[in-house]
Image (cartoon, rainbow, N blue to C red; front, side):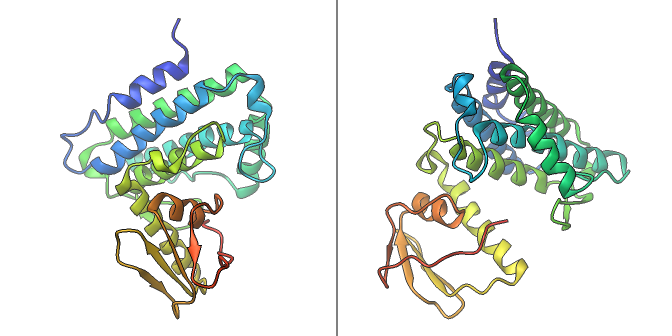
Length: 254
């Protein structure tokens, strides 16, 4: 008998059902759906007992990561409802509520935790599919307080499922990511730093690309795009070299 995760994987791998909708962010929706399928496969490879083991995120087990990804889909569905109805519906009532929800979710039985991921992902996908063309530019507010067009939920979900698949520590690797997704993730990190006014003096030298100079330039860090994104998103350094011999300490992504 099919499990909810099998259903979620098939739904994501079928691709965007709204490709003909001109207002929909088609490319980002493809990333989000492919990422959902990728996360689902990596989750399916874990036994129930293995869910209790640590993730790559300090203080979080794999259970916490799965609960977070599930509740993130539910939170983004609230933004979709806001855009569809015009009634303000925040992602979360408060940061404290979000954190408590993840802690509670991490205690669910394994089958319930797997179902949480699958069912919330399917619900969000339906919200994307059914949103009227005229509402994709409706403004909603992110958990960080930014006003953005609701079309940005597709990118928000894409980065969530792809990067947290790595955090499951079950074999996911940023080398598996689409190169255009990696490029956008790198740009997303730099945008987040700029919005917060972080002072970063660094030259990012990705193989095959023009160097990116931040601040005064500082040390030059060189490497492949997957390894650079892994480091910039706070997932550890691998395969990178620094002109000073030491990799600088970076600000957080979020």
